[in-house]
Length: 145
Image (cartoon, rainbow, N blue to C red; front, side):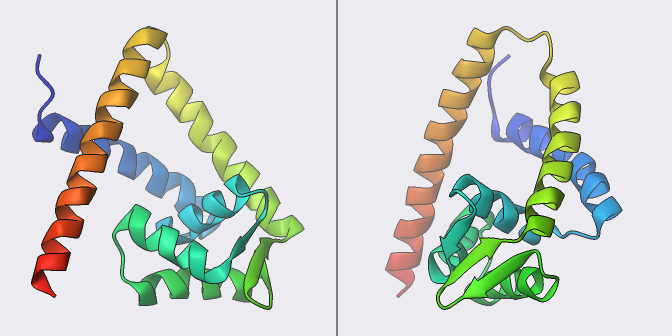
């Protein structure tokens, strides 16, 4: 079997309903989930503009949608804004752990039993493809300006 865009798309489409079901139980959107995850990965706080930029890059959403996701998390008291920085609240960190745990359980079942070497190879290949496609998108956007 050869890796194709169709196979990558099918894998992505198989992951999305699982994540959507987990998020729906908490009333969290995908954009909010990614913002919480990025903030947690950054040690619990993030410059608001940098977080919006990372959301834009990760999800291919516009700046307004990224800002909305952050504002919604602040309004829900899952993030707290102090100047230009946002940080996870205790409630936000707890929600992140709850969702991460549920996602990890599903991923363990789905990826379990696959050789670590195969998973490492797949990760490297998908990272290169993502990097190249992001560069292609950036070049197209720059040419359009």
